[in-house]
Length: 203
Image (cartoon, rainbow, N blue to C red):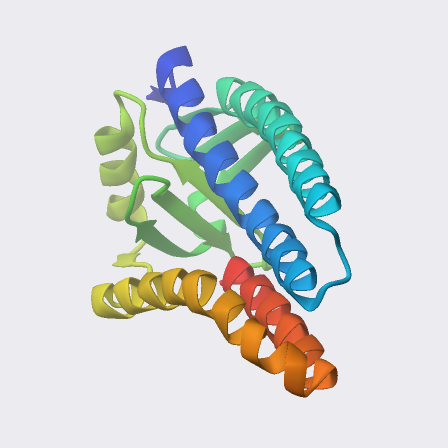
């Protein structure tokens, strides 16, 4: 059997990837601009201009990322027969004997699919979205034990989102009180907020 994503599915998935990547890249930079403005290092006009430039750059990044991901997904082909699993993608073609697969897990969510790990430490992520995904999943499950990839519990993801929203609302107000008392403490808050967003982005 041959599995591939059609053009519509590839573009839809690429839009989600580009949107998430753009938001993750933009959030730390915008938050730092807002907080530095609160410290008085940036005038209103400079803060507005800086924010506008960051948004423009993020949009350009999003467009480039969308095209790159859509092109890569459109070239993906997976062929599964009795002896070999062949994967053709932007980086080249790979032929894996079923015995070379060490683990297989199913990743849930909008960007989920199958994650295959080989005995030599390689990893291949096969996205969900094509018409033949169910058959591909069944063939993999028949050859190697298929498990569910661990995901952060739902309540933890909700709590994390709420914490980010609260930080975006309340940290700038807290800056108003701290600036007059200790500029060093205010700068520490800027650094901590920036580092926290970077850590969240990587999770």
